[in-house]
Length: 87
Image 1 (cartoon, rainbow, N blue to C red):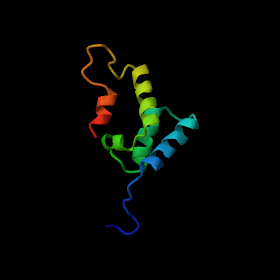
Image 2: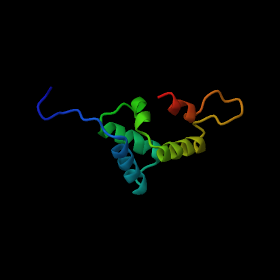
Image 3: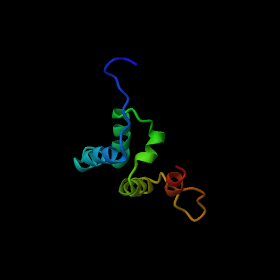
C-alpha cells in the first residue's frame, strides 16, 4: 500500500452527515449529494445503499419519484424500497 493512503471505511452516520451538510447548504440535490460523497469517500455508488439512513432513503425516493426516475404505477415490479431491502 502506498504510504499515507489508507483506505478507511466511512460509517453510515458520517456518510449521512456529509450528505445532509451538502443538501442543507443548498449546494445540490439529494442524488448529487450522495454521488459527491461517494466520490470523495471512494465508495462505489452501488455500494452506498448500505450507508443510506432511513431519512436519506426517504428523501432520495421522493426526489427520484418527482423526477420520474421511479415507476410508482400499480403494475410496477420494483421500487427503491425493494432495492434497499436487498442488502
